[in-house]
Length: 392
Image (tube, rainbow, N blue to C red; front, top):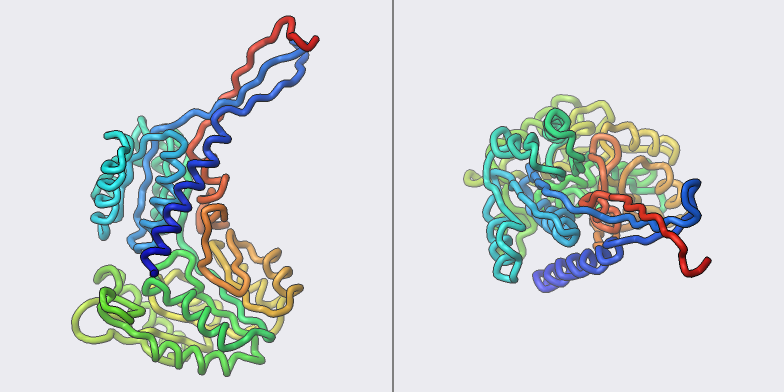
């Protein structure tokens, strides 16, 4: 059932882009000017030669890239070069094979497997590439911008890192909030750019939440991701594995309370125990930096004004989850949080029509929705004088 629903979602995304791009082919306007009584104005949308760079290695990144980048880019008539993350090259190669079997002409979608400093840098600085779209870390995104500026000043859209707040209000249903916060953080082994990695909990429900969050983490099934019932697989590689364990050690050293987890699981593979920290303070490394792993950090707050200020006190602004029952509280939070997406009583809910992207150092530009089509088009104004129009 899960695979069937995923396939339906993918089809929905492609059909959505194919429909809306027809509305952008040629927009015709009539207007007067100081030179002619009437001019015929056409805004024509021109295509590009573009490169899509994917540094991020998690599976949802491929999904995001194919549907949020490749989909609209092809629908708008562009030719595409997709450079995959070096850790995960095979899926994109297979999908490209399916594209060609479906009838996509040769040379329209091209896949390059390689490393960022070589293949990625060559594409980002190439003078014949008209547009860049990048998914990956904020630090690498800065390099991509520099290379684009130093070459032909090509426009760039960026989907970068995050440290998204998940806010549990005092009137929340705690059982539901615990389960949703667990999903928001631990989904895909925590390797998700919009993961709810700062769990703010109101002081009146904090103790109950911590106990139930700990119990839920202890129940999480970790193991072979190809086996039925497994909720969490290994981290992507040894580098990421060691990085996460280093963050866990820093949390302990800085005085956060390790409620559960914190160690390697087993002796084979890059498995990490589902980890929960409480008594986390804003200045701690685990509260400020993107861990990209199965580490939940729980922070206590007193009132709405305080949590808004603390949630916004981050260099990132990708997304946020808020869990209130009061609609006024929800409205206040959705307006005040400086993020690209706010999920109310849900998390990681996506649709082809919903724009997706971050504020601040989480990126620039939007994917999905009509906004995404504009990323892959150039606008050209064509003006033709009309003499003796029939209606005059």
